[in-house]
Amino acid sequence: MAQTLSGTLVESLRTRIVNGDIAPGEKLPSEPRLATEHGVSRTVVREAIARLNLEGLVHTRRGSGSYALTPPADDADGAPPLARSLADRLALVEYRLALEAEAAALAATRRTPAQLAALADRLDSLASSDGHPATAMQHDFAFHRLVAEAAGNRFLLEALDRLGPQMIAMPRGRLDRHDGGRFTAVVQEHRAVLAALESQDPLAAAAAMRVHLAGSRRRLLDESGTTTTDSPRPS
Image (tube, rainbow, N blue to C red; front, side, top):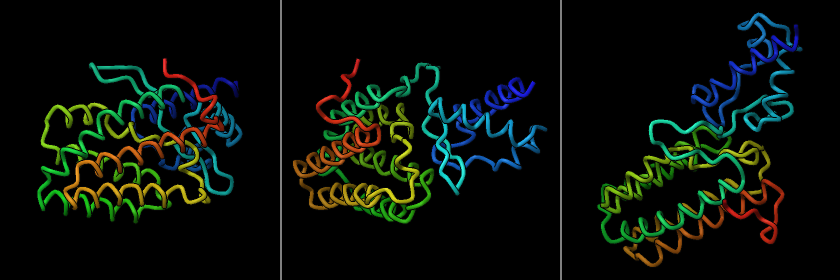
């Protein structure tokens, strides 16, 4: 019976995470709250959370709680497939390198003062969101979207919009308190992109975006415990 109750709770939470009702990086309701809401014991809740951890949908941080990760999901309505594995995420970074390096180069020559101001504001919001990974992910995506918008090419912008915020990975490492300077590095990489756009230097802008996305790739590999020599090939 407990297994049936646990399975029902897993399905409920899985649906909420995949549908985005619980956003990547957002903390799940507490054990007591879930137990009350679903009319189950806390043991059942713990079993359900453990299963979601194994599925890679949730990361439980001792003493803090459980947090949603970027979920896999079925393709729908012509949307691009979400990254389902490390190989998928690495392939997504490769795609973003091709797309966003060019977008940054174009943005360096086409950006307006208003767009620069919007990018600076968004970067400040990102820098202020340390410790709030769900909020940081939204600001991160918004910054990249603003760069694509400043490029003045609707096809580049539409490509980014089709990816959506899920292109910003929410692996376990982004949820850890002591991330070894990971968040600081991400912010600094964004600052380099903005500086190149302010200087109207397309080569520097493309290079800064490549450095940032190469850093994203390295962080993904570090998170998975995979080295560059044995990293999986995208299929």
